[in-house]
Image (cartoon, rainbow, N blue to C red; front, side, top):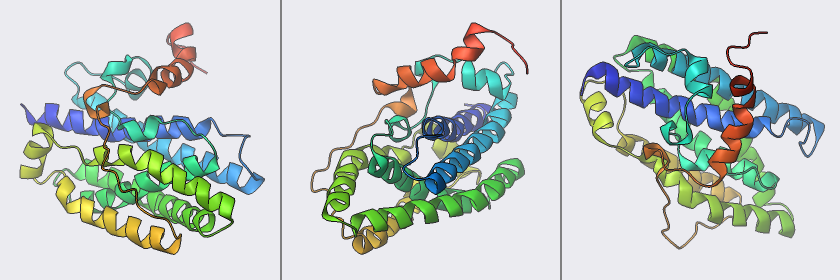
Length: 252
């Protein structure tokens, strides 16, 4: 497998994670629990879509047939997306939204930190820009997890249920295959094994302060990295891709 093809596939993963989670959060614009949080979630959505723009633009340049970031975002079918199942899960109640975000942020921050040392300077540059935003995202989501977990009985029970529901999707973030092996060997990306202990340490620290308990079951759902998605993905894409597919090549 050539270097360009492997990096293309890796960039698609990162770009799709950001794109799909950004789309999910955009659904909450005007529907936040309070005005301040409505604005915060919308800004995080914009950050993620901005990151997706940079990642998919780079990916498109490396694609077997060159694509624009818009083409990669709007003109692929469901099985061609390789985002983790976690980011496509519905917003649910506020606790679900925050827990999904926290599990992702706790993974994305150390990943970006390690990508700063990538031998691919363009990827390192994208990571540097994204890291500034992701540090805020993690601080925001972790503070809310603590506030809800160590809050009222109702908020504690709801965020605990969110944890038990969503953690089973989170381990797929550390998926690796031959793409990763080749890029790791070339010093382009870090290994998932080097990120997992940092992610786990962050989870333990925040959950302890939030008085939350890790689920005892070991259920782990996966498939998204290989194009097998949950039932929610089709509905998300139908809404996200509607304008481009209805009015092809439309420009503002």
